Length: 224
Image (cartoon, rainbow, N blue to C red):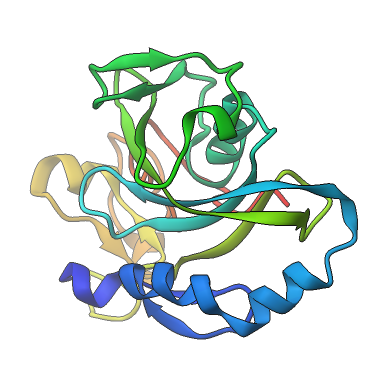
């Protein structure tokens, strides 16, 4: 499926659906987001960084996050693990200049390393690596819109994939087919009868760029 068909998502504040690039522009002036910021009561006023986050391979999976400038990269790493990545407790890092670039310490604060236009690379698992690109696109002064240091403003809708057997919406992934035939998407009925002796039961398709990697099964849900 073409990326242009897969990379649409929904604004958390107003429910509008649009592409990744359109969403970044929309959030800057979204009336519902501006109202949520005006009504915010959580804590004292501070700086908040708008990050556009996308998987580093085809960009079909993406997030828009608002992060308290006082939060650490370790907290941001934890959020990415929870919503997208965690499977086996692998090592991870942030770096500037690509995944072979200069490593940025996890204790650094978001506001100290991210300014509009700055992009960092996040790597999870150096064996079967998941690469995430995070770009600062804007900053806002004010209170948090939630009690947490990271707020999910938008994310991609789960890609709609077809069952390789019947064309219905796929819900499972057969890793044996992925490795042997470069396919493997199945609906529930065909997953139940599909031969999968070598790699175990077909795994759930979840809204994460790590699906199909290192046995990842999600939950791929926002941590809060």
